[in-house]
Length: 405
Image (cartoon, rainbow, N blue to C red; front, side):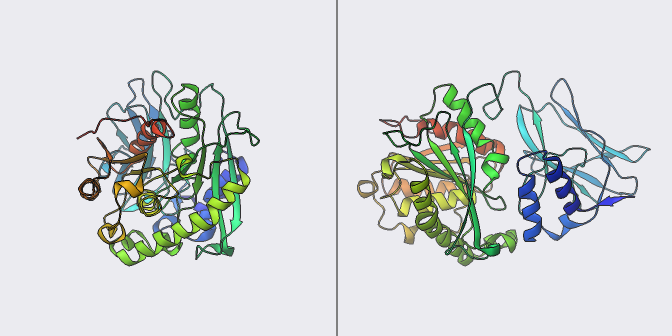
């Protein structure tokens, strides 16, 4: 059976310019950050995936030599077995799926494989997957709709703080809202939006569709125009290169978080404030993130309340955060927060650490908005978090959401 490497896939995507993150995929491969199994040779043919009228999906995978093929589908807790027909095509049909963007991949005799009939691939530094969109009866917040669109800018710079990056090249994305005026008398409020472990700076736009979420919320009059900064979230690149097991050791977790905080405060923020017309006041600054980015946003925000008045954490990886020590002096008067918003999916393994952290904050009389919604550690939860968090920002007084238990 003819095989093709991920490098060949990347080159093909880049030549075709299928998606804006094809270049990010190529960079990922050059950095050598992919799990060894993902670099393996993969079958070159997969029949098209079918989306049925009831929004169920039939996935296909062609390999007549495989003895076992599983489908890994975002939102399902573990891969499900596929069935093989006489021609060697493996299939699985889902139940009707809610309108969403779903990541998926195949596991063939224990090895991860992509769907090569689908060019939509996540630009992840560890685990590649395909993306499939289940449309709704009406446009969803993350859809590219017929509304005024903001602009997504990509910047590179040479870091002197973050370590392990090839040629010390760091990057960040900036979303400016429709009609952004660099000479406006009133600076724009700014949200620093942080990605999770294994993603890069492109994660929130390429997979999270954050720019479309902001476009649509603005068109609906639900948020204030704001600049959104999405930085590369590693203080030490070895933190992702070492594999997921590194999360079991609190020392490298703390090291990566501390270096990232320093990079954000001393390199990224000064560049943003010189390149864009954004607020330099804490009342006009927010920080939020998902998973690793949630850890970084809560750690950075709550230890630098002189810089951020609005803080959010989505499914935050705070299980190794020594907050009793780091935040021992935290108190509501000196923090003077406008919003502290902590959300997590109820099926997420991080729900217990997040509840414990909320209890810690409440014991210190910090006003905290606690949100719990159904869901695993997945993008469906985080897109929904962003859609509900963003309208609360930079309001006077801040809007409130009821706690969900």
